[in-house]
Length: 392
Image (spheres, rainbow, N blue to C red):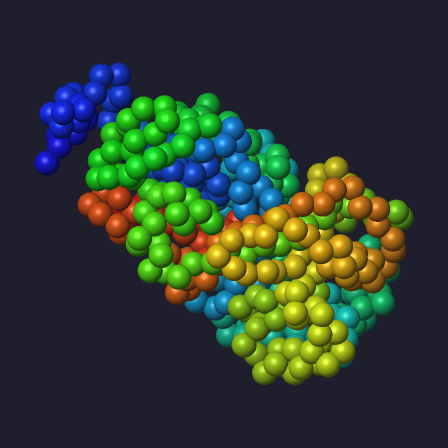
């Protein structure tokens, strides 16, 4: 066995590495899972280094909506992780200094079937499993935003749902971990090899007691064989940033009944199956392209709008203009006014796998943490907290 703090020379002899003291945790990836693991370890006083191949985080945590949803999670482990993550986000926002909207989300029912689904959820599962929600109808719905959403039938308000602007929140979290908790970051650094006790990188060789690979949707650079056994996929999304062309100071994340077909809190309810059949008959293009409307307000009066879903082993670089047009049409119908598109891009996240996430014990002291769904912001902080606690 190679001793801690040692490396191999070209002829295979062991040599002690100088200037690279052993860390408690070496973490690969500076997305939300990597940063959450760094926080969970550093707040316990452990020595942590984080390695990121790009100059700044650019993966799912930056590209997607920044919604930390409690209300959409299926009952059980995912719901409890989302609830536990809520307080961690509040702590980060306070100490890292980024904006956090804590006044919840609105899931808007546009049709009678969508309304039936929300009512069934509130009268059944929400009560049984303690979802923090309330159903707004009639005068309560009309009062939202001076009547801007009165053309809908109902709104399910997720009381504990939160919203961050990822482009600002993730860099602020990096600075907080570096400056206040002493986490050492190595950006623009590719990790080439992982083995028990060591990382080999473009910045040199590093030793650590625990190594956690949080590589997002990259399943080939590191630990390719154990990751391949999960049969992972990549989900590609079309995304927009827009400005409303009318007076709307949106302070809630918005979803529609289409989202009930996507989120586990609702998707297995009988009413969801009836809704799916209705959409298949009336708007099959929405199901074919995995479109369900999400709208996230930014701190600057703009809106992040999406999304579509396309799954495969790789993310195609080509966007379909028709998909964007369908999403814009949905957004304008939902908001009750016109929008001006400012920016377009592709979102991405890891998918497939045996469940919503995987925590792999690959070798002594080496593990991987992977999301297989787009809810890393919702559950990642608490997921990492539990993972680090078990590792140490």
